[in-house]
Length: 124
Length: 175
Image (cartoon, rainbow over all chains, first blue to last red; front, side, top):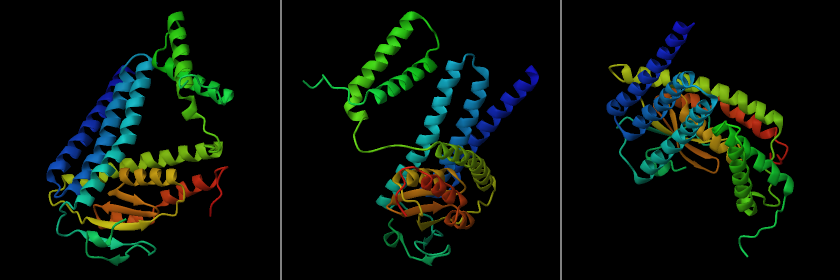
């Protein structure tokens, strides 16, 4: 039983580290700021969540578990907000995007929508 | 005097004090006399200090139990989608050629309440290949990392789920 528990904790820790590693690698490899945000926002959320879950099985009393749950809840709610703040600031300031980026206006239209040319046409 | 306030809503005052006290005992689970006295006086003082801002007349923030149950189901679906999103991003980042075709899409949401719009925008950020850049009224600007992700977010089933939560409210009076 103890061995099984240790195996589960090892699995959680290593998979959390794997997702954090993938997020950092994506931050280096992907071409522009918008695609880089994809890597950091998603992988950091799941990676820290898994590591906190592994810690929750190891600490003692329930008050420590409650504190870890609070940390996890804060990270899971703050992470998309920070991503949104960075993204909208970059968009308003007109940061560069890769050459093959497409712009589609699907407001009131089914998915493929109509192609528009650039940032000025697609303000929300 | 500014710091002497009349208690407007005694029932709400007690409810918020009990909630704060429950949080206090989650954080420090010893039942000594000193702990109980400090916790109770702090909770009463905080609720008393903020009571003019806590109890405003005329804006009910009610929700029904069925909404809470539906929100739990929504969160379970959200966790599943976060897992899928991570594997998708890992696949893109770790593959040597990096098959990305990024783009911006402007969408229209069916949701009517501000809170559910914000929750839906945050769910879009956490799920496969899409990030919400901007939210203005019912116009939603989304960045997608691949073409399939863009197609997926345009008619995503989570929006109907959020709409279901919104409509089953007791205070719902819209279309």
